[in-house]
Length: 355
Image 1: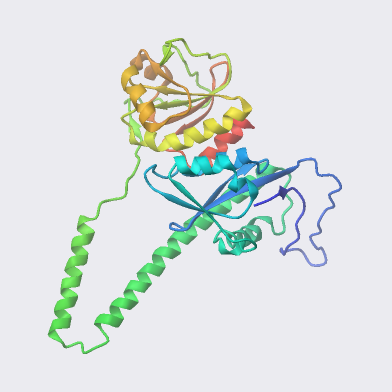
Image 2: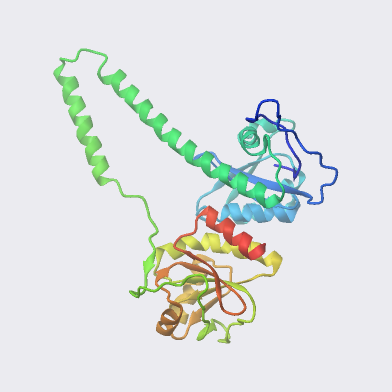
């Protein structure tokens, strides 16, 4: 979707009598344009996307790689695309064959067959109608707020529709005939018993809890000093360079929440490479298990380990994992995010690190 430019857009709004809300003129537009590469999961009815300065083959391929990282490797993905030229380049086709992805293009002059096209109308009405944004960051935040509202609303409506559908089917099939029939009453009782057994045997949803690694009451907070003493690299065992601002990911191979955060951390690291920002990970486990964990989880950012785990936790007040810390070149903490990161947390980290 794009190009997205910063200009006043007309619409409807509440205004005082005889004082209409007028649109200002824009003679100069120095901020340029942005592109929003969007994806729609038709099974979950989930819409999301990435912001890019252009739509080159490299940008499209990075967006596809980020989309593929959100699904298991063994799960085959059918990607429906329009006839945009970067979608048919050889690099994209080669990537699709290597990552278990099938590319499907819509017919020429028939992009409306792609279900994602009708989603942009609602987005424009909610985000851009009667708007006058001053920067692209404001546009990004507004679009992400709409996506969270839209995905949460559609998930709720889908559950309500399924419940009404099965209630109506149950009433039509079992209660339209004579109510005094013995075999129909027996069938209803059996159906209720089966439903209760299915509910009792159903497994709860997978939750990624935070990991308590220390019982101390003090916690790492903004303004505290974050020490990197005793942190070494896995390969050549050299000390970490702490003379510049950096974003630190503290994790453990035994924490389920850390495994859930790896997707967000890899994405933040990929975005920070363009700005040459320093992003590292610190493992609280020994060197050998950490190396195997990196290969199994396909961690992209550089990882270090603690030669003395107890002193590192005690000096930095590390109580809960996973932990994301924004550290200045002086060692002072500028931002702390505890637990599994949400989409809003990822956006805030990007704004803090990349600017």
